[in-house]
Amino acid sequence: MSPRLNGVIETALYVEDLPRSVEWYKRVMGFKPIFDGGDRLQAMAVADKQVLLLFRKGASTGVLEVPGGRIPSHDGDGHLHLAFAVDESEIPAWREHFARENVPVASEVKWGETGRSLYFHDPDGHVVEIITPGFWEVY
Image 1 (cartoon, rainbow, N blue to C red):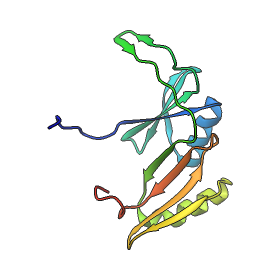
Image 2 (image 1 turned 30 degrees about the vertical axis):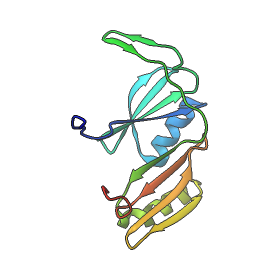
Image 3 (image 1 turned 45 degrees about the vertical axis):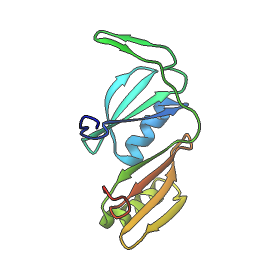
Image 4 (image 1 turned 90 degrees about the vertical axis):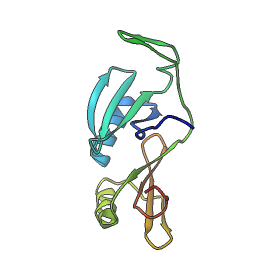
């Protein structure tokens, strides 16, 4: 049996234009920048509990030496997917917000009696979702 984990803290996306993506996630999703890693990385707070890491594509393919150790190389490509938790009562406000921000809702899915998802795309074509409780056993 594995030792206990407390949750997912960081999620990473790889983007072509780092400033454009930071601005988009600030404006559309309301995320707050919390770390400026220059032209390599920007970190954004998600609901003051998790971190979205935005890496410029190709900027992390080498080992990075930091004062406390080394960060292994990594990179990603393609249209990735991530989902953010919202309350069911917030879905209409999100629809209105997306319309104001000219972010088309690509798809809406109703999961059984209570779960609902809205899918949309960020500037790099990543599939972003907001999802209400009711689909996953753990959410």
